[in-house]
Image (cartoon, rainbow, N blue to C red; front, side):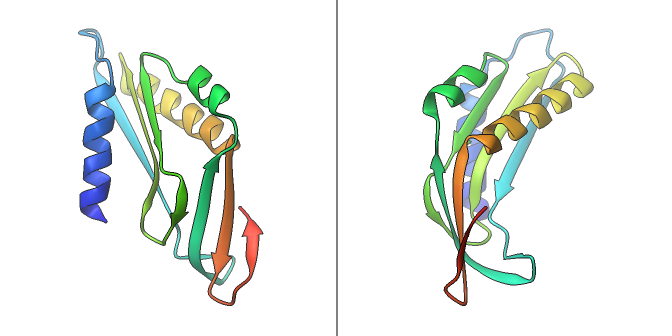
Length: 119
């Protein structure tokens, strides 16, 4: 898993535009949880519900990579990387972007006991 995460981070950083005034890069890696609400997660199916919205919220100071399909616990779901002149700006931008991206993802969790639920 670590190798896959590092590959995705490298891919994100290659695409990110860094200005000479930028002093910080913040990288968020969302991963599939092993359990939720006391239930063991078998897999998480992830789909982008609104691609146009995803493209709209990304700008020259940010990059988003979302892995779609069926993912297992420990696998990366998304990478969000943002730059800013200060760390506060970069962290704030990253947190806001993560929330926006999560709002346009359709996720279905599958549990060991064969139950499923919208995440």
